[in-house]
Image (cartoon, rainbow, N blue to C red; front, side):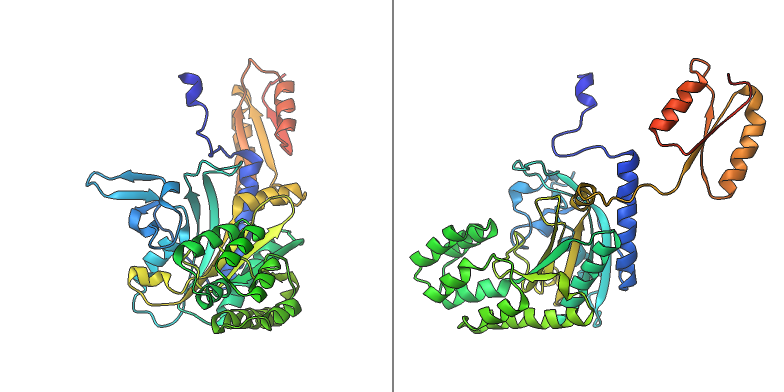
Length: 396
């Protein structure tokens, strides 16, 4: 039993030392960029009433939530995703606001999924939500925030892939697809199985030109290819979706960051609350997105506030893995000093320690253990990458 207690459950882990220091430094750099865009921090609870994350809201499936009961019998859930929590709190505290509200957050999210494939059940997320602005400028603002934040942590080789969920919805509406066919189609497209998606569309009698579009929907395409794809569309909703992407590109271009963009008309999200532009950032070293975001214009209505919104979330654990794989992790920059002293050297050592700490330096005060040798301390200090070690007293 004692051995079991020192291990963590599957899907969670301890973080310490350089890994934790680097993670905090990563978060600090991203937070500086988010703050520079005028966002103010908000902290929401780690758990909420179950209905905040229910299927009606369009977030994580119930089977993937950590659920439990309070003493009154209410069903609660650990947050799997920050966006519904921020939407709920914004509806509560900013119900009457007419001008856009900018909120940002940092914390852990929890997903009770058995198909982890090495993924953690508890992950750290940082994000920003722009509430009350339905413009393409707001979409571009969030995408530019994402790009600048990724650049701020040293990442250069990455792509922000942008899609529009109304493109998919427009095709479904035009062809009168029922809910089950749409659900099956979403599942196939979400896992990039375009052959399976094409088969579903053929059985539903969808026009050939949409099958051609679908064959290339998941391909990374340029803005020119996106404009060419628009000529093949025959429904207004999908046309407007592509027009929105073109407009967002033009705005990001003004910021000088359009080189990081690519387009994916087959992009969908497992979160069904997205209503328009969606985007994901990809880089080397991890098999999934390091950032996700998009527009969710109907989510706040669930909590009593009719307002459009767009946001993004940085997946810090995956981002840190990518930086490590690319050799781009910034190592701890502040050196740590050790002052080791015995009974006879205590006063002199503490005076030195006070002086160093008053200068803002990091110092560990260590009372000498006579069962160890001076060499033991020196060897361990080297392993811990301690920059400076000094002994006081009669330590041999």
